[in-house]
Amino acid sequence: MKDETCIIHLPGDDMLPFETRVPVIHRISVAAGAVAADEVLDVLERVDLASEVANAVGAFLAEVEREIRQAGLDSHEVTLHAMQAAFLAGFVGRVQQVMMHAGIGVVKH
Image (tube, rainbow, N blue to C red):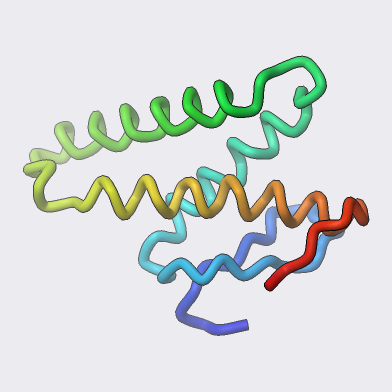
């Protein structure tokens, strides 16, 4: 694994660390995505995954925009698109990590 990319390995995990290939500068977004995925995975049989991903991304971006405003920054100073992409990489990476651990026929390329 490369030091300059984000690794998904949540506290208490018995799964192997998962490299996302997302630059480490976006580690908070990746971690937020992984945590959001865990919350969805816990109730996956009762929810629509596409809707849950859309809701999670919307909530994440709303929180980021709130934090940017509270810090007195211009939102153009922060690349929201890159943060959203990193969040999604964390979300999908975590889903893939869980599926690989469970042996559900998903392989890492």
